[in-house]
Amino acid sequence: MFGNLAFQLISFIFFFAFCTYACIFADPDTSDVGRLCTITIPSMLFQWLKRTLGQKRLSQLSKLMDHGFQVIYLVVVLGSWSIIFAYGYPEIEKSNYIQSYHQYTGYALFILCMGSWHYACHVGPGNVTAKTIPLFDHYGYDNILYINTLCPTLKIRKIARSKYDRISQRHVPRFDHFCGWLNQAIGERNYRWFLLFLTIHVFMCCYGTWAMARVMHGEIMDKNLLHATFFNAITGAEVEADYVIVFHYLFMRHSQICGVLLLMSVMAVMLGIFLVFHLYITSRCMTTNEFFKWRSVKRWHKKERMKFEQALKHGKIGTKNNSEGLSKQVPDGDVGCTGLVEDNTSSDVKGVDGGIIDPGPMPENIYK
Image (cartoon, rainbow, N blue to C red; front, side, top):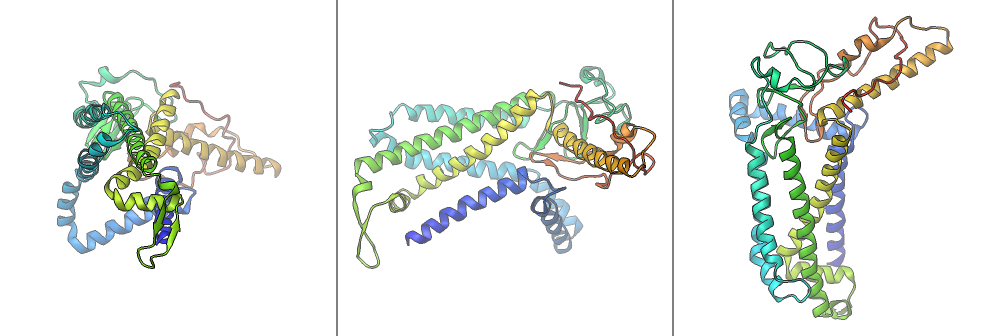
């Protein structure tokens, strides 16, 4: 019985660790796991649904699923808060290890949580049109990620750091990414509210984890569970207490609270990593869109530099710098929370004339 619990806990931790690596850290261009989880499996699932449902029903399902992540968010968040209100608050009132005023703090945090989500869902990122270009045209072109050209969809000048978002069907200034949890593109005018939403939820998960952990700690101390004697329900044999047995006891006695505690602790780590990532790119004056594009530029530069150095050893040296064609090699696919969703460019990057050319120094981000 206790072995099964340990196996379930290890499986739970491994599953979330694998999902975090595959969907956030793994690079689909270099990692087989990342490519399998973010490109191959979603593509196979889409093709299967297309064959099973047909294009018309798939389009109807797609419209319904536009709000799918928001529904999941509401089910998870409201469900977790309902458990805390129904099961956690009575335990807080009885506990000697956490003050009762934390109940009121919880109510305030719940209002902040739902309020920040609702507001972030409804504040737009900005919309670049022929009339609004002067409002958002703050940045110069770096001729690497952004060049002075027309948007192929809207036929307006594509200002620097902007991008046409296929999902929301608007040209977004200082485009960051499309957030499914908000069903909203994140750009110049709502990025601060997205950060506020993310910060509140990280704090909520950390605070909730601490509060419920204090409640469970009080249960352990009040009943002296670490020195108690337990009985195997099947064999009747006495079992000396250890951490696994005590956790199993708490999980069986307070399954709802322990389930929410596990969920909040895992989400605190994952959302915390995501928040740190956004604070990092903000400090570097980059967006999510630009971060992944610069990663493509660095891969391109490293690859071309290695090719050039090999050619140099064999006496084959290009005659011009390749920066002229670099902007054509930067992917411009859809960008989600975890990076590029699709890549519309070839990963086999070549020089301007197909030869081996000196790539020159690594380009700099002029928006720092």
